[in-house]
Length: 114
Length: 109
Image 1 (tube, rainbow over the protein chains, first blue to last red):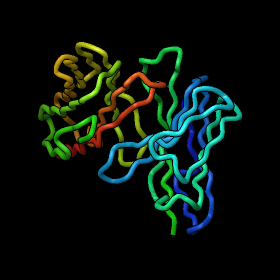
Image 2 (cartoon, chains in turn brown, purple):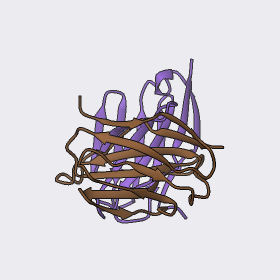
Image 3 (cartoon, rainbow over the protein chains, first blue to last red):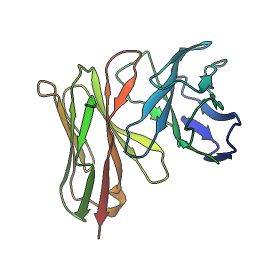
Image 4 (tube, chains in turn blue, red):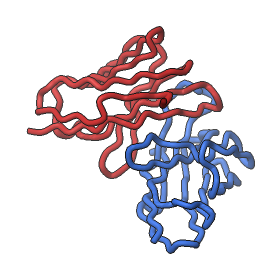
């Protein structure tokens, strides 16, 4: 079955450490997105990529980095520069050839920094 | 003011009740999405609308482009409908979505 896989589901890290969240899709979608979700707030866009080896900053990119070396994969690194990294992170993908179609989401990764 | 506003923020209903969740937006859009988020956190897409009305099982979604308003209705609600329902709009820029803060629905027996 086609879909998006995020791993791990839960992640604990010590303050000051970088951590990488995995996102893989087998839907052959061009566009992939990373969102952050905090209690009481809507999902906010961190980074997005429309094509391999290219990506753009979203609304809250500071303290994060991404790469898109393969169409299927869009890992997100939460760096030590992110001041408040504890949050729920969601990865999504869309078919740019059909822009007004639904987005597909992963199951999310809950990151806790202690 | 958020570009996408949902109401109510929280909703409790008894099994069998008819439920309505509202979404208003202030920007031009090419499409509106209704999403469902279960307690585990994963999100599934329920509907994508650009006009009119769509129905899937007990769920109905409507949109009024002129009034910049959409509603999600659940008929004969059931405890398994308990989830957070999120409205999101596609403003057409790189297919990015702007999200509402969600409506937390709890359906009790």
